[in-house]
Image (tube, rainbow, N blue to C red; front, side, top):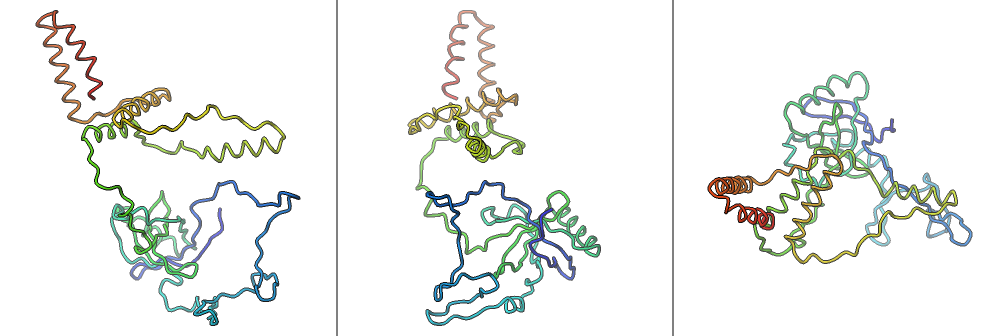
Length: 310
């Protein structure tokens, strides 16, 4: 169980829930140390006073705001703790909103909120069940790390989760980054939708960090003095896409084949109008086959041309 990073209370209306905040995620990345190439000595970052050159410990370091080059205003931990903010010791719920009204780009780090003591159990469960029944999420304000923050409370299994959020003015406007007006044929969009259907998945839990796994293999091989693992295949040269439709159709075919090889269903749900077109064509072919055998050959040719126009 990770150590709590903060303790306080959730408050909404006149209800107060003592809680402890615990990290909901963990860093599984492989971290490196910097070292001197000549003698392999570790490179460390030290906190040194620029006036006397003395290396300082944390208890010798204060916090201040620079008003001007010659004026520094000291701000102590006591100053921050005594600020007249309702969010200084509480996660203050200010609104309940539909979950789909929250822009995902605003969501940051995630934390589990644990009930702190027996007295917190009943109101904790009350808030959890109310959120589940309303199908809404709670928007809250709280103060951590010397700033007031915006948060989002939702339910994950039986736990209340707090997502730190960015303020609206912290989100950059993407308007200038979007492409100019581009004309697209409906058939290209339909092909892209078919590709999305071919790549559809109900569960993404099987995906793992292959980069970390490969890096662990390299480290183990070098530590054991063994030859480094070779890549399974050389990547082909990246070419420029000239025919967008051809690339989409090839991607749909590759996605279907990939699903078939992995044992998963390779069935693609076609667009409704495409289904109707196929049924009509099949019906015409059956009628033509019943009328005369001389038309069987043209029917086969039509069947051979159909995939090219799809």
